[in-house]
Length: 333
Ligand SMILES: [Fe+2]
Image: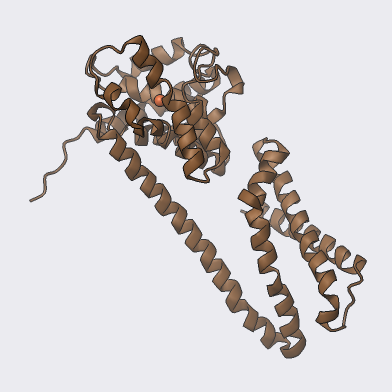
């Protein structure tokens, strides 16, 4: 988009200006051999990346209304990995200057090749993320095969959560995080302590209820230890059974204290469950579900999200994807 390009160019100009200022402040001179300006160049690189990261963070703070520190943490990356990448890549600028010094335009053309290689490695990283996402879907599907009544539930909840997040006008990055959290919301149930309880068709005892409730924390812990997923995804999983009135679990958070991802998942989880057949009852109709979520708006669910759901076609979409899933598979020969 044009505004994105404008912001990118603007922040680059500011970062370059700070870099140049650092270069000159550290005694860097123009038209002299590069070797004598290495310290000043290092100062330039540090000033450039610091300015770049701060300005990008400010942009995300304004757009996503997050705290500055949490955004900066994401921009800097786990263990400062993005700064390390940046500093490792900065000698390319030195090489470019050197080649330009010796070969003029031919030198600049020579440097384009490694830059394309770097770009290619970024694209590979994106593909890797995509295949990770596919693997997660397979994993979730595998867990759900233990219980035929919840088969496909997480995937449907994630699609529904994505749809609602878009309806709420959230940013693309948040929509993506909410979708991932929704896909993984019951991942804690992979632990063998829940196997018996999940299989059980009768009413659960108090003790079994106490055990099953730990799946939210278990899931968050699992994700924390296994992957470098954003904090918001992990929080979405941890808090997906919090109720708007504060009577949920595990932390009894209330209202807008509950992360928006968790508030959306709580609603989608219930909508999909109500619209599906269960061993002890038939599926509810779209109208019955509409009535039920309206009744629980403000107690179980965030009333603002319920209002958005009832305003649009969300429930029809949710019912349609359940119908789609229950069509008999075509048997191959
Ligand atoms: Fe759950």
